Image 1 (cartoon, rainbow, N blue to C red):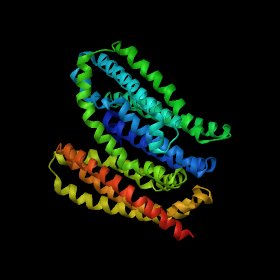
Image 2: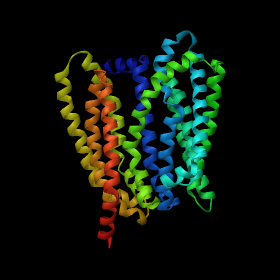
Image 3: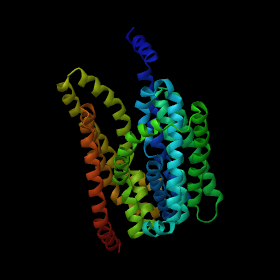
Image 4: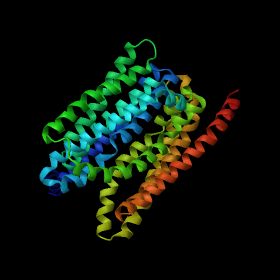
Length: 394
């Protein structure tokens, strides 16, 4: 009888069903980057692997800049503009197109200068601007589906895009004879353009309104303040690749990116467990059961630490299997990367309280400070540690 009650509760609860779908999808999407390591490390040289990693970093940056982060206004906008929800969504999306055109023109004019500053080919920089905007459109549509509680469309579309990108990228990398990294870049770009263009016109066709100053002001007031926060997050997680690219070149970026991807197993586990933890945490906080939360935090901490220790033991052997020998020198930094995810785990415990008490300002300040410290430490330590590693290898 209890089992039947649980099954019926799952069937009748959109929240539970969406939670299950999001957990599975999130696990698959994050796992895909890990699963494809043995494929791309064998199809691409270390240097080419590094170029792709830098390109994807720029895609993340331009996804924020070109779209002005106005998808953040969707959650409240569809309620505040309830009677004209579709018109609101189409007009705000059109605003992002104007922003993209402006950013694209600026980047195109200064492409050679930026190419020299970041030590990246100018055409790759241009591709990253285009791919970044189409990534924004995709995220915009996905955000709409999340707030509409259409979890199946959101999950299936995310998986379709990820799987299509991987398949097309593999095919193109095999076909292209020279500069194989373009196969990976074109795969990302082509799939993004096809899917996001369809979604773009789908939103515009439903709303049938492209210029609405009131909606534009509303979305910009919410989105623009978050640009700095999200760029700080990207800097915190990916500036290291840009710094390595500039200071010591693409080959070292390739080695570092391989080690980082190999060390991301804890992140996959953290993402899945956090999806289960947060709803439970909020429920207990609203019921003022703080003592129960602190008791469970201890167990949660111990279980995650044990999982990290297990991953610590298995990763070196796994690293040998996942890539050719010319990648093996990167394995020395994998333990450090794995250990860093324990700090990220501790952060998720704190940030749950911050969100509950609506202290989001402290989160932004923390992210910004971490980003600044990260930039300084990368610039200072990368040349020093690279020299020491070279001496140790000789």
